[in-house]
Image 1 (spheres, helix red, strand yellow):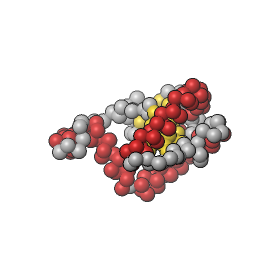
Image 2: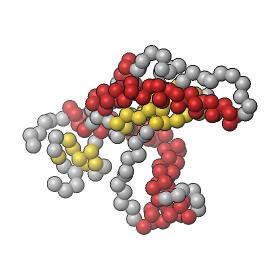
Image 3: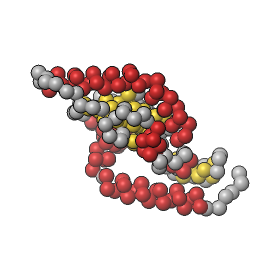
Image 4: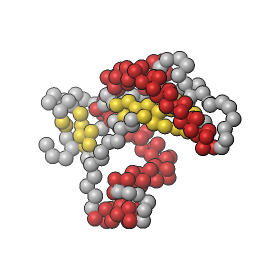
Length: 193
């Protein structure tokens, strides 16, 4: 079938590709991780971010104590605290990630922060298929030529981040509307393939 229409497992493939309703819901992910994570790992509930490919859990570790020569020394101590957490919790994080990946159908990545230092561990870098025409490619090339980005891929990521920063309200409204469409689609009639 061409563009749009019913495909495979009864999911609808529109112009934008597979819809969110094709994935298991991750609406309860923050609560699931709050209940599943060992007590004492973080000083507050972790931040849980979900998209179509990945769930990222970022927890806050206890602050490093003591006097430091300068900000660089404090940042090094914070990075060391995060590194220790990463090594000490590796096996248990892998086990939790496997359970979450089975439950939610998405990869799981971890991160930690303390003080002004935040580090992510092995996050997913998903390739995105783009069919850009020359005017769009020229914009990316201008960003590369100006030194804003090292590659078209990095320039595209930069542009997406910039739009995200300046369109938060609009994007939130759009996500809410898409969620309502998914709910209505789920309540719709069933068709045999």
